[in-house]
Image: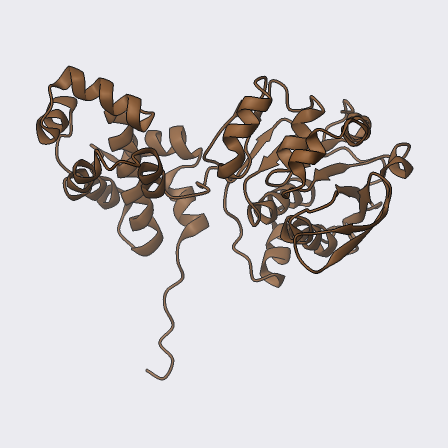
Length: 341
């Protein structure tokens, strides 16, 4: 990529060029969600379009999606000499064939080297990784494709959980609607939070799920990892006793195992230590309370089993990259309306 930062702009009144790369069998929403965000974003100084958008494919023409709708596109090579601000590689079932298409990968690499920012939506990370532009970077994709991304491209630091990740001027997002969250965050970085809020409001979208928001629930993660249900009863017991002192000895006793054997087996099955698992469940409880109640942070920490508000804050920063108060600001559910009462 160019050494210019994503915020640099040759002319602040010129719309930033966003190029979407598509190929056969993309997921339609992976394209149109972020495309809608960039198309509606206004430059706060001029109230004119902040971005201009182009959709490109290897040869141009109509490109099939995973729906009955096909997408018109321009030849990718036509953009190779234009100053690209943001490159977006779209995801879909065709990503596996795309990452093995040497001509497509080479042209995306050439375009990405010139772009101020590169990004991918969902499984588009597989195609972007094939260019080498994700080497040494933290990256995410749809949870169902994370294993393939890590296996096929071992130089990429794959993370399972986040909705999107920004690593310098390289952005990747998880499945489908996460591309909208990523696009809104990019608009906020380029044009300011108010511009992103205006787009989110027009799309009736939440503004904005942070990159630290999980792409699926910890409860689902536990079920997937513990497919044989070995620790199902233990997890239910932990959930009912989060305010207790849940050390390894206590958990091992509840599971009917020695502490040493329990710690070893649990980490092998669940992919994390018992202590980290308890912390994740406490964070999950705190998230629920922050979203659905008006309890103080001190009360939330106590009800979630944290020994103090500061410990809860450090846990949130470590696992979600946001503070509890920032989390509440972003994800607090609106009070229900009581029409007619």
